[in-house]
Length: 85
Image (cartoon, rainbow, N blue to C red; front, side, top):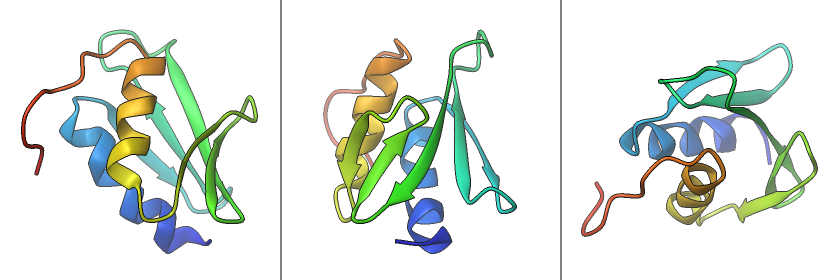
């Protein structure tokens, strides 16, 4: 996995109301709850998996939408029901 995989993931948490910034220097995404920026996760692409800074695997390449749902749940953001673009 590489930076392109992280950028592919980036849009999915945004749809769920999370703030996403990328750090090309670190090859990571920073996913933050917009109402309280203390709630944040750093996401790295390791092998075929997306992993948080606490080494929690949150998804695999190709399942970015599921990964975004897990991130939203970890950051206590409601997950939209129904179709998500």
